[in-house]
Image 1 (cartoon, rainbow, N blue to C red):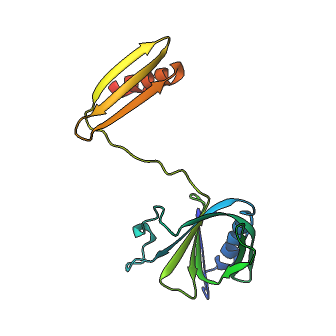
Image 2 (tube, helix red, strand yellow):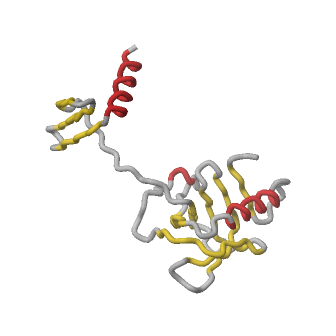
Length: 175
């Protein structure tokens, strides 16, 4: 089975029906799980890779209740609301690697909805050639990184195990 499944309305692709069935099963397995729901405009080129999926104001996270596919229409309830909701798609794309479903609504051809299990978003900090200070005692250590230009100070406190991992990794990159 491919890691990407696509179902498209009125498609003559031989796997179209099987893909819809697999997507329906994935969708129903999200029962009682928290999902991230994001809606974006499709860029002019149509490439989903060009969409900024970083969290935005109107994105939602909620517990998905009674997710079902009836015919080609997706049904669900949100744990914060009582009424059942639905969307009839013209196309569905499931990325099994990312556990992310893209829904292309029939009623809004310029919109794509992403539904996925929430993932941790890490804040990234790049420090170039920082000042370094270290203190080690009783098997653990503190590493202080300071970047004067950015006015940033990072303190890393490492127990014996993490300190040994760092030493090993530094030694293997030296060779």
